[in-house]
Length: 399
Image 1 (spheres, one colour):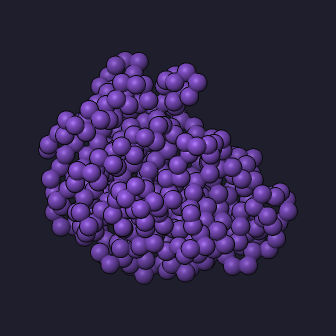
Image 2 (cartoon, one colour):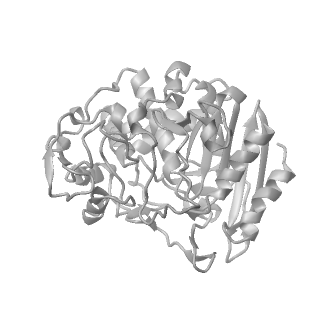
């Protein structure tokens, strides 16, 4: 392990200025590992970031579930063009909004049901509670994902009662589609999502701290999560446990809890192992997790020009002179954003670089052209995006 003092100094200012409680990062380039940490697991107690701190990774759950789905495609247990109704008959009566900015009561019949591919690409027509559209508000009305003790099965049945925002394949919308996919995985394998991920990904990769629950003995290792107060300019609002973002519960100790779009806990070490695996499909000791050919589908753009630019328009998003669409240069593969045009982000990055982030400011990337993967962990909901940008810029200026 090597420490890069320059990068630690660069990132530590975000802790010193009050934007984040603590930060932990790792870069793996040509099997050389560089890592560092700074700050606190909990500000109030001044408990420092641990080597094995555990984090709520939010949407960085999605690429893991995507790999599980691709494994089933490789095993010919599901197909990309399978309609979701083949596995989830509760969606047989699915309807679609006539206008995206209209009323959820103004609906029409669906033309073609969403497919497995649509779920992976976010072209199915689903939305998210925190997005600025009528369907997201309908999810809140239905209390979708609001509980921390419901099963994935029951949540998907609730989801089936809401209309789609648009006809499948008509547009792109970041969404709960990975939760639908996760439920399909459970049905196909006849097992819980936790058990599936443990058997097919976590155990073969020796990811010992990644799960939907955290043992009581490890609770003290979980970094406390915060929200940044833009008025007071500090981390003044501590988020309670179970945590909420909009209507999303995120418990640490409910055994029945599992989601496809968020919900996992992980450590820097564990997620860095997963990110490195995405180069070859193998663990360090040669365990074949997934074939390299099908793995390429994660970093291969599947969207045509009509979808561009893709963008996540959250409630409260202000598009002023400081606004930057972080997805302007990207397309979407089967599970991750993938870089298409580095010129749209100051010529940083390599075509085909891929990865994703979590709502609490976690982030990872994989660049096969450089044999490089990188992960950064912290816990601030919708934290200062400059942290991720500076981390990314440092990587592509120095590796």
